[in-house]
Image (cartoon, rainbow, N blue to C red; front, side):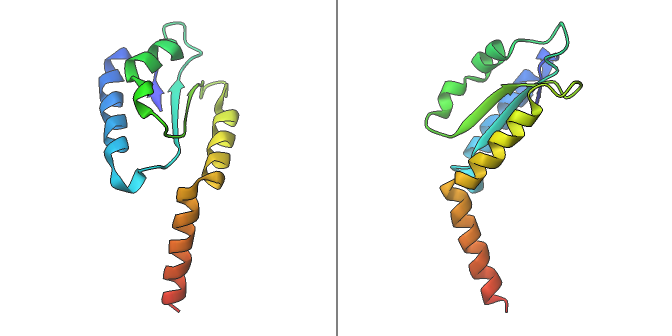
Length: 108
């Protein structure tokens, strides 16, 4: 979640995103990025923020970048439903479930 009304935090947000993208355990995981506080008049537009984050660098990775407002709920339900659906369809989730099942069976 990125505070779209605080441009001074964008560089930290971009660095955190880059760190997540490099993390081996998260390779291939669906990614949800929320541009929060879109209800505020001084918020940077989601389009401008997407350009700043250089989301085209995500390539083939499954992701959603959504403008939201936690204050009034705008976009939140859709974003969460997308994430749940993406995780259910993800091959990575299937692999983790298989791995977890094997671990549980081995502990019995």
